[in-house]
Every structure is written in C-alpha cells, then in structure tokens.
Length: 240
Image 1 (cartoon, rainbow, N blue to C red):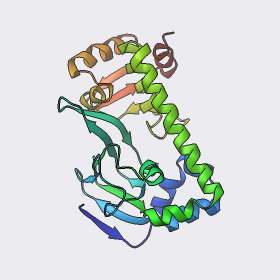
Image 2 (cartoon, helix red, strand yellow):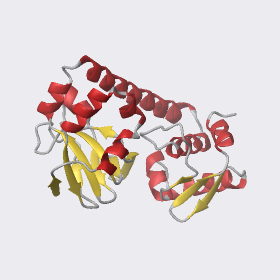
Image 3 (cartoon, one colour):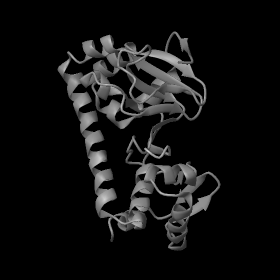
C-alpha cells in the first residue's frame, strides 16, 4: 500500500461527500458519525487500494469513501484480459461487502487519478452498524448494488449489443455508481475503457458508437462521449 495520511477533512471534501445521494439521505447525526470515523489518505495514480482476494483483515482495509479522484473496480478474466466493473467517482462509498460477510475482496480497486480516500476501519464500521439508522442506510446501499447487478445480468442475457451500449452510456451519464438524477452531457471515458466494461473488443464497440452517433444520440470526441439525446438513448437501451 502506497499512501500518505492527512489529519482531517477539508471543507471541499465534506461538500463532495455531502453531494452523494445515498449519503445525503442519511440523517445528519449518522453522516457526522461516519465522517468522524474516517481517516483521510492520499494515493498516487496507479496505486492499488486492494486486490481481489485480499482479506478484510489486511492493513488499511475498511469501508471507503472517495473524496477526490477516480477509482477503477475491475477483475481479470480467465484469458488474462481485464474487465472493468465500474468507475467510482467522488462522493461514493464502497467496500462494505467484505466488512459485512468477512469474506475476501471481490475485485481489484485501482486509482485512475491521484485520490483522496476516506477509510473507516473494520472496528469503527462495526460500531457504526450498532446504530439501526446507519445499518438501514447500509442495507439500502447494498440493495442499490443488487439492483445494478440484476440490470447487468439482464443486459448480458436479454439485450443486443447496441442496447447494452446505450444503457451503459445512460448509466455513466448519471455517474455510474452514483446514479444521480442529474444527467451530465459529457461522459469522460475512453472507448477502450467502455469496451472493457461491456466485455467486447474496441473495434466492435466502435461500430455501435458510430451508429448511435449517426442517429443523433451521442457525439464522439477524444476521451469523451457527448450525450446529445438522453431520451432517445434510453429508448434504444430498452429496445424502444
């Protein structure tokens, strides 16, 4: 683990965490308890926060809150290729599953940029979970994760590739893990990374994106995909 520690959160960090829909729905007392239990660390780009299979007892393990930067959740396929599961954006909390069931980490977590990270140690997380309001909030967070996984399973088994591309772009336009009601007009993600999310080749994805661009739903640029017509993109994602 390569990181440095800061003594306390800045106002900017608190504003970032407070803007997250899940965190904002918690009562103020539970918000403050969670932030007070957190240690702020700084990570360089490319650093591995944890690896798939790491035990929850590993040094630095805990519940994590991303206060600045981007984190990639990924895993390696049997053929050695990387599959990106999600790109975690500022304001999101993650890592709760291993703390709840005590099992090893389910995926790799890598800093895509310099990162400011909040870490709630396992012992502090266990104390927070004794508060029924906080425990219910964690249950709601897990429920959102399960819904997202069911959607991914549905996409993989029932939808064609173009619909899958459209649906993932709609998800990314709302912040991927964040799922904000506010739709951003530019998704800052390379086509290579999007292909790794969908489990297809870069060339195959390019053809689908070109078709969506020709239909006026998106625009393609270097390192970004513009969202021109979110309603049409959502209809495409549902086969409409």
